[in-house]
Image (cartoon, rainbow, N blue to C red; front, side, top):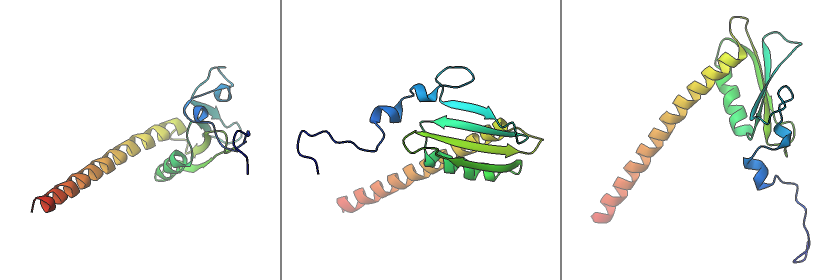
Length: 139
């Protein structure tokens, strides 16, 4: 246990690294700092690796599950290469009739619709609960 004023080292991500891109997000192809890097897999046909910075298991697993619903997807998986790098690697292989970029766009569109519906249902439930509580308080 450290005494007051003593320097403590923690194995955790700095707050500034959680919300901002730094040199680690430099795209090897362009040399620019970018949030999403798309890297073609040379060994597997119709396969791409998306390096998505500033994301974690929340987006990785959600995207993976939505992509698995698509019949054009042969394989999808994700990993967090290192817990201190706020980044996921999403690997997708599709059938020759479609492209990985196309199925990801479709999955994101589906998720936006689904999340919008969930938010509307949540707002409706909160409004109903508040109305019920106001009714109880007035009586």
